[in-house]
Image 1 (cartoon, rainbow, N blue to C red):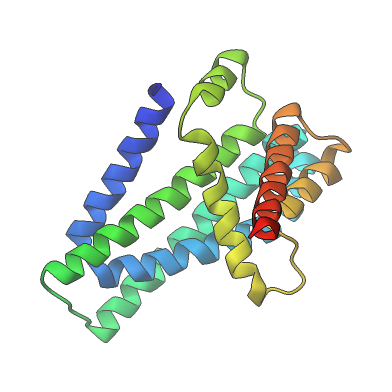
Image 2 (image 1 turned 180 degrees about the vertical axis):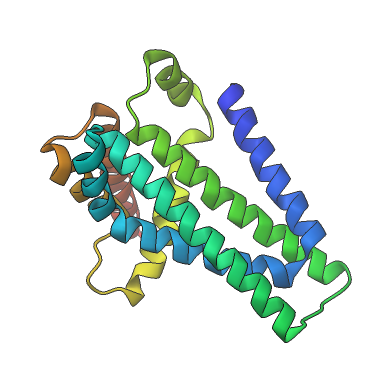
Length: 205
């Protein structure tokens, strides 16, 4: 376990504790907003990245990362505001251990999605060798890398025109540069090999 793993565990623990304190109702509204923000940020990041490249001259990788994070935060903050407004209007109240248990569970899920988003951004940005070494030695980096894509692919059934997460990411980066960085290629190849293993497992059954 390296410093990156410890940082991931700390973030997950903080979100779980926060979920326990806030309770289920507030957490479920926040989780819905988080998922909506993730899906829309992925869908629109290519357009935003193109605008950023045009006006700032940033590299495609940086522009895509900035566009994705900016959209995600903007949409998420909007959803949080809406959730608080709905909670006040509806005046929902669920007290007791069940509300706190549900809140802790949802807090952990939210933390997992946010950590996964950060991990994916780290993959896109061309960091130095020392950071890449931490990523490869981390026990949790690979598993967390899959969380946000899995959530996106689960939700995209309501968006028929969308490709899966990795397809959207690949197209967004490729549209801007005509090429993909080694780290992004490695992530895509890892995903393909993972899917192949799942298919083989189903066939054996």
